[in-house]
Length: 243
Image (cartoon, rainbow, N blue to C red; front, side, top):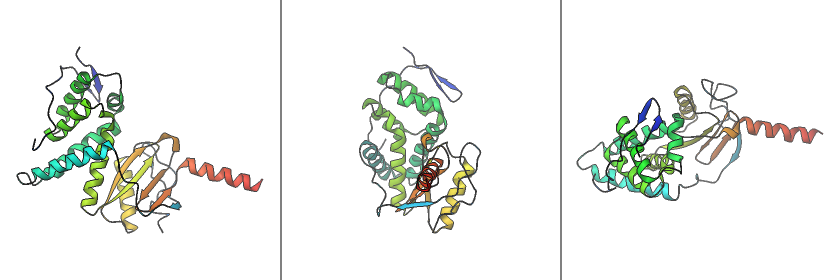
């Protein structure tokens, strides 16, 4: 049966392509000046330090990191004939992550456990072709589908970015918001972190509606929490103490 997938403004409707082999070489509390909240079109929140974490961020582990390491190895092998291979592959993963972040139908598609491998491959490969993803990432997606791991694709993209940032001496800021960030908000966060002395900052974003609003930022050993959820908790504790 043909796949019918709604993703963005395109319907995918084609039979599954042949399977590819995944083979070679194929104090900072006011670091954001704008007040109050985050959300679609809203300013980024000011941050408050609530704790100092351990000396390093939790290490990425499991299947996403293994896939990311394998892809980085392939990119390294390609550098002899294509010096810009790593940047090209990183951009492909960033494109996929942005699609996952911004397109709810695509998120639903990769997380749908009801789709068998053939249907998932047909839909995924059509989307990859539509957005211009290269062979290396396409092959990776094929392997992840075979292994029933496609739902880990966003984590693989983040793991690859973290590995590349570490290699290049960049610092990764893990940012949690209740709604996806806008480009303006991303620029504001990077600018404030840079002003605070962090160099080569890249953002690793995630959305958690349970924080209600505001943002949580972890960079290096520091954790800043200005979420509405935490503010309400602090208010609740203060009221209990005053009772």
